[in-house]
Image (tube, rainbow, N blue to C red):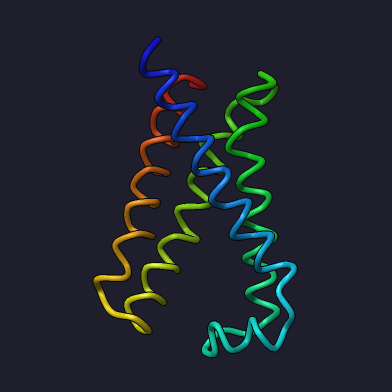
Length: 121
């Protein structure tokens, strides 16, 4: 029972993190978004924002509603892909030390994906 609570806490924190990040990418004006990440196009950043919002929903709703609970680990795996990109871009722009945060978030997503996959399988 404790592992399930821990998973729910991690999923909730990750979902909030990705929901906030995604909404910020979607509501920030294009010129400010272009200044934030000059090597990436605004359209790509908006796409990533949509993926983050959908991933946040996917981390919580399928398992919570008990309909297609296999979508929860799938959402986590897809968000791992986004975090791999975040680590690469962060290393290129700000150095290795700043890439620790997206790396840790990616590890937490791998943990959630593995644990929820075991339950769904």
